[in-house]
Length: 345
Image (cartoon, rainbow, N blue to C red; front, side, top):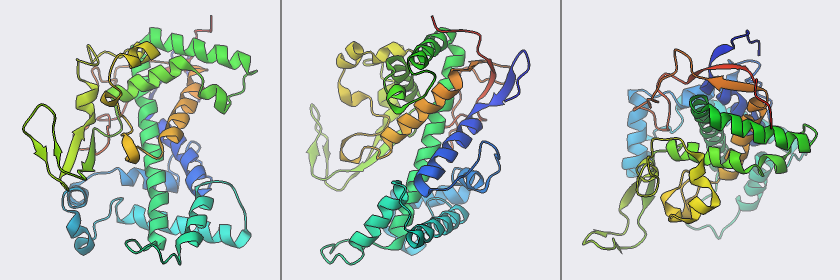
């Protein structure tokens, strides 16, 4: 990145999305995407399309979420028609190539090939018939969930660090100290063992959870404690993640960015179920660990060498896009980036 003496203004969300698209493309599909070198790479372009919302897409989502019984008749596309066709084509190209070559990479594609062979003739599956589109949908969900949520978490973290330079300096010092112990190598164990980094990412996910709500279905009649309300079986339930994360009873002064909310002592002082950026229970986000690792890796890679500050285009306070399904900054996140001047110590 070519920076002048005063740095350079960048739209950090797009840069983060290029980084995570490259990682997920390799992990989920076993292909080199090269979005960082070529921001208009085909994979990246279709990734953008998935999160472009218009009236037609809003109708699709309304049917999928609120009228699921109509899906088999109207056949709305969760990802949009063009991205769906692209992902299906790429997926089967990779699958067939992998089967013909016999190559094993230990990635998602290998797992899905094993599933395909294991369940294709399984007569015990009376209520569910495993077909080829089920494989495509698993890879597609893994791809979209992986690149979008991780890039969003990274970009919102950079935004908050730009507004909170003391937090940024403390985090960079922790990163430099860790790198000094590994001779500059970024390893998995190092990425996952930095306590302050974990606190910073956790606080970002509190303020900006990838999804502002969770949707579930009640499995049995349930009487809400201390009330006369009974939620009947099969009732759709929407849970406000943002509402819980901004509850001042558990997170005082909730608009403030404060990583110290996630010290072990602070976490133990409140109920565990008030913080759930990836959901909770048996349907907790399957990509949670990969998403966190990916986000932390990207933060370390950039913060070890660069620092962020607000610029004239930075929205303060943050304004979220009301039309987006995921938590998205309206108009992107513009920050000034320059070579870091602070050092560990």
